[in-house]
Length: 54
Image (cartoon, rainbow, N blue to C red; front, side, top):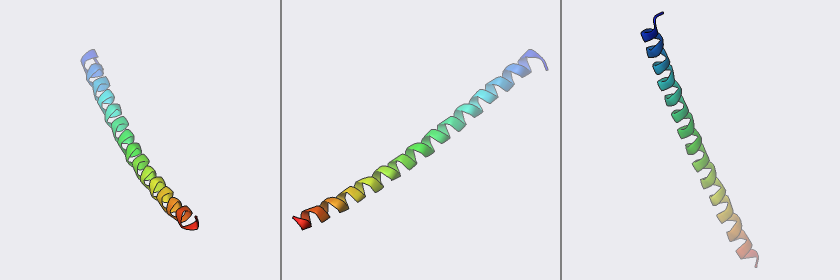
């Protein structure tokens, strides 16, 4: 393997790692947003129940 091939391989590897990292980050952000929505919905439900008790 000569230097040009090695350089190309490393560039491709770096691109691949970057793309995978981006996808993982995006998936994590989406799941975090879903969790936040669930928590906010639960909080709303609990707050309405408390108001009724008063």
